[in-house]
Length: 195
Image: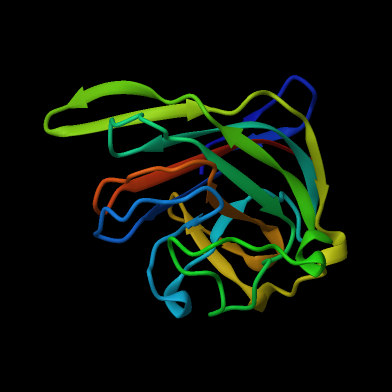
C-alpha cells in the first residue's frame, strides 16, 4: 500500500476495490445493483481499507471509477458507502437485482457518490477503458459504532492485509439503463484522509 501524508496532517492511503461483473450483457435498469455474481450467495461486497486504526474515522473527499469497456452510453452509477455491511453475508442482492437498502442498513450510511460523466480513456493494446470522477464532497465517517471484531471480515489490497475493523463497505447501483460489456471490470478508488 502506498501511503502519503496530506497537508492537513491526515494520511491519504491508496484505497480501492475491484471486481468483475458476470459474463453477460444483460442491461441494468435504474436502481439495479452492479455486482460480481448473478447468484446472491456468491456476491462479494465492495470493501475499502479506509481506516488507519481499528474502527477508526476519516474523511472521504471524492472518488473515481475506471471500467474496462469504453462504451460511455448511459454509463451512470451511484456508490453507496457504509460503515458496516448492509446485508448479511451471502444475502447481498445478485447482480442486476433491484437494490433495496433497509432502514437498519441506512443506520450505518456514510453517504453516496454519483459517477455520471464517463469519458473514453483511450485504448491500450486491445483493452479499452473509460473513467469517471465523482463531484467533490466531504463525507466524514466514524466506524466506532459498527464495533466490528478483526474476524468479522478481511481484504487484501495491494498485497497488504486489512482486518474487518479497518474497512468501509460499498454497494454500486446503476442510476439509469446501462448495457454492460460481458465480464466488465470495475476499479473504484476513494479519496480518503484517515485520522
